[in-house]
Length: 312
Image 1 (cartoon, rainbow, N blue to C red):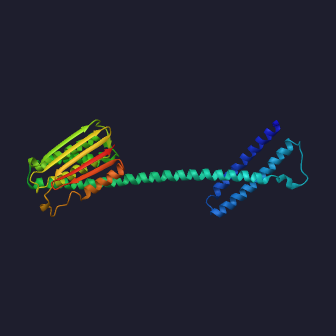
Image 2 (cartoon, rainbow, N blue to C red):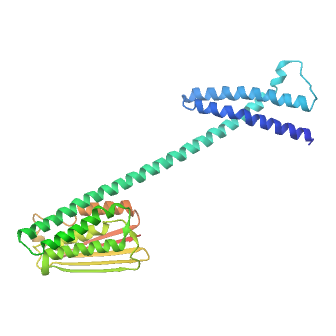
Image 3 (cartoon, rainbow, N blue to C red):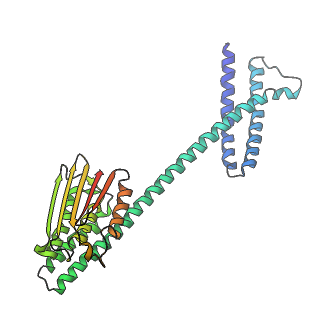
């Protein structure tokens, strides 16, 4: 290929690139028009630019290769305009393809952000439901102790203050450490022991390979609270609650077992399978650990056992 041809090709490509700059701004202006109108404007713009580009290409060819040749008829200046129009239409299709892809990606990101915000809002709503639920139960316990003029009432108030500080302020983060949750469970157990005294047998074992393992807050407390609510009822002769928690290699296993009120005495008592606590627990597990948890409930005549596993 002769060097002059290479120069002409580069010169024509540069001219086409320069002409595409105002074309791009024109496309931005018409992007809000009704689609058929926008298509018509795009075609007209492409054809107008194609005519101008064709004239420039022919002039380059005549001036550099034919040494100043000029045709006799004016329409020769536009010879090859369809080829230029086809190239510009391909460029326009690529332009709109890239633009639409960028808009689609932006919409996907916005949708993901909105979904994440809704997800966090739902989790916070469930926590705000849990907080009054826990507070209501504990205040009922405190009320019963004050009516009986119990000496343990001040200790209950101190325990309740520490727990509320954790629940209302420290649980605003998406995750807390396992050690914090274990401490919360232990405080809750101590609180219930103060209320029920020696009539209630409670065992709590925890094994953590890493106390700093992260977990969504207050999920485990729901299981414990439910066990005390139904397993320490005054209609049970020998109430017993057994709690076992193990975390190893980011695998959580928790078993909570409690005695039940005999069926013949269940009149007027809400079942352990009902109430806001269980509903909130299931929703929080779904939101925080979707397809990463397994909840099993065994409900026999005398024992209610809940087993939870979570892949943290």
